[in-house]
Image (cartoon, rainbow, N blue to C red; front, side, top):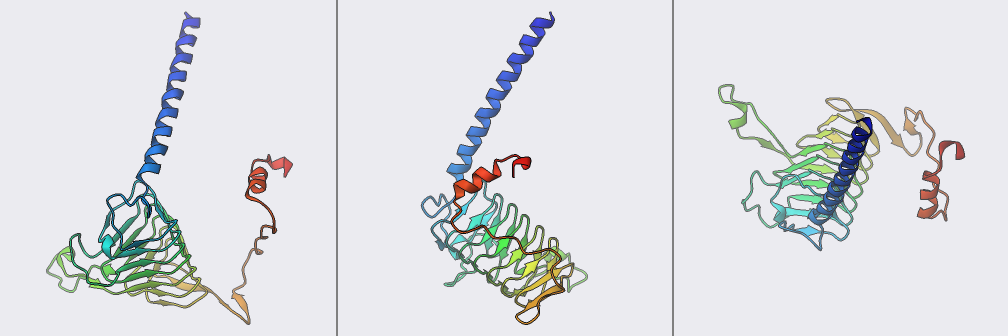
Length: 247
């Protein structure tokens, strides 16, 4: 009896591994087939989608794409929401409402809500679950439910080369300069100068940079050592596969 039980358990484990492998391969195929690119836009017809740009599958809510421009080589993660206008089916005029520059990265589960213009500069990286919106609820009338009152809208501009950490929120009217770092969970409003780090809710400047003094307060960790010239991707992969005691 123990021998039969072991044989049955081994057979069950084998079937489970086989099924798991089939499911994983099937899901990889679905992810590849369901991704949105310039060559394979699916049902979405963006105003522009640049070469090398890819929206991972499954996509989040996407509408108003005729007023959305996506630059070259952007990476849009799974379940990312991109909307132009308050609802689908509106005529928003002749100009784009939501614009992403070249090389923008939007992490999984992020939202970019553009009821009026939202611009994200080239090579800006957003971690997962970042929320960028040009619209906020108003509560002027104390006798009406907040959700039924007409919202306030202000354009949002995020400069090139920024980094927005996980869960950061960018509110209507925010204007971020070049190479701004937004800490995870920060809530940003108003003007943020070039080369600054902001943190908190509401976000405040915690570090700045200028040509004369560098970063103030000084960075607490040394700068990373760049990859030497001439190192190939294959060599980097080989190093990554080494055991810790072999490096």
